[in-house]
Structure formats: structure tokens, C-alpha cells
Length: 170
Image 1 (cartoon, rainbow, N blue to C red):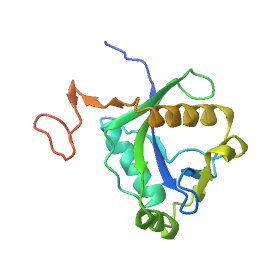
Image 2: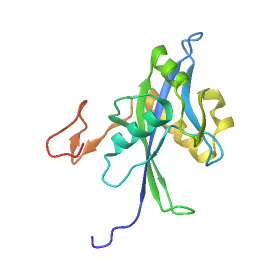
Image 3: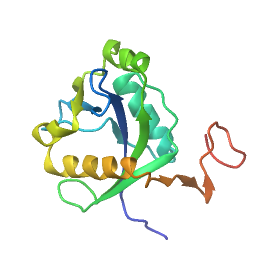
Image 4: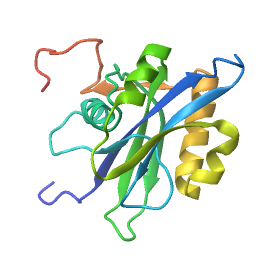
């Protein structure tokens, strides 16, 4: 292609915490960004030539203090061009974190463009998220519950637990 189209690549992470009082209740980690209405999953855009799962990990660490291995995509959300160029958003399985990891989130000071970090029960997500973000999280939750995630591949090779991989940028 002599002139490939411009496209945004968004990377978000779905992280859960079990309610210590009710083993059947889970909370999802959301950020409250200052630059938009409603809460979202932690994440952001990948830079040019940045591996997508590493972009997700970078945003997750910056916004929440968590460092998680991200190898499974729970859902992919295509967003047509409107106020921004068209985009594809990937939601990664961050998994169920431990109480110790949750304490890391509680102590973390997010960047200035994040008003706060919140653990929100599934029953309250619709109340705090924009419709498109809510639908994305509900789809990711469904995939997580049913083990329906897809492995992330880089040039046809599953992302390994550790980097670097010969021939792949790291």
C-alpha cells in the first residue's frame, strides 16, 4: 500500500476484583478520565510500531499502578470515523487480581488526566459509563465468564509470557 489509511488502535484492560464479603460478586476496575464523560476501562492508544499488548500494559501501569501479563483478547470493538479517525479497540483479559494488587491500585496516584480509579460492580456499570463503553465491557465480561477470549498473535505467533522474542520488536 502506498498510502495506508489512518486508523487508531485502542488498547484497554478488563481487570476484576472479587468482593471479599460475597464470593459471587465481582468489581471491574474503571478509570474516570477528565477528557470525556463517563468511566472507561484503563487503557489508551498504541504508538506507531508499539506492540498492542505492550501499549495496553503501559497504559494500565501508568493509570493504575498494575503490571499484568496480557496475552488474551476478550473483545474487539470497531469504531467508525466520526469526531476521530476510525479505530479498532482491543480489550485484554487482565484477570482476577489479588487483594495485594488491589492495594497497589488504591495507593496509586494516577496521571492528571485521570480523575480517579474505581471498582464498580457489574450491576452499576450502566450508571457510570457511556453506552458504547458499557457495551464493550459487557461483551468482555461475557467472554471472560465463558472462557471465549482469543490469544493475541504477533506475526502469527502467540504472544509469549516473557519478551523478547527473536525477530519481534519488544
